[in-house]
Amino acid sequence: MKVLCDVQISFKVVAFFKSRTIEAIHVNTILDSFYNMDKAIAAYADYHNIIVITKDVDFRNSYFIKKTPQCLIRICLGKINTTDLITIFKQQLNFLEKAYRSNSHFYIEINNNTTLILT
Image (tube, rainbow, N blue to C red; front, side, top):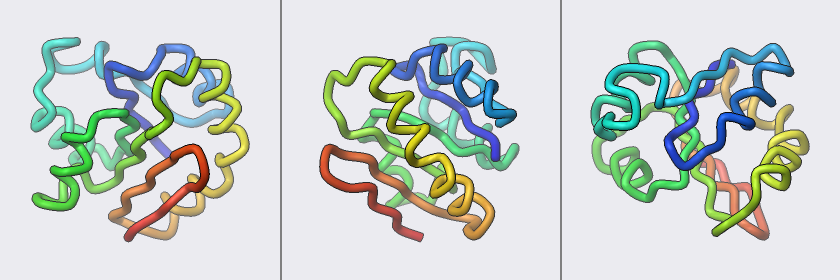
């Protein structure tokens, strides 16, 4: 599994995934750093078969309209702190890895009550 954390996601989340031997990068370390356009981020992720993790609704819209990025996890938890977000990823890690292995395209939305996956 490979993940690309968008600008609103802390570098600590990247470190969490790396500590689990999951390839993880932050958007600020690729392409044009924090100046990246969503379209460029999605193209990069699709080319490298990477899951985009974001809070940005624009990525959700792009997934459903343009089918890019091909693999997307959208965090819909408001102003959640990084420690709590990492706890959620710990709880959901097996589910996320299975989704990655089983589907070439998916949208996962994590909110307060559920984790929704659409393929």
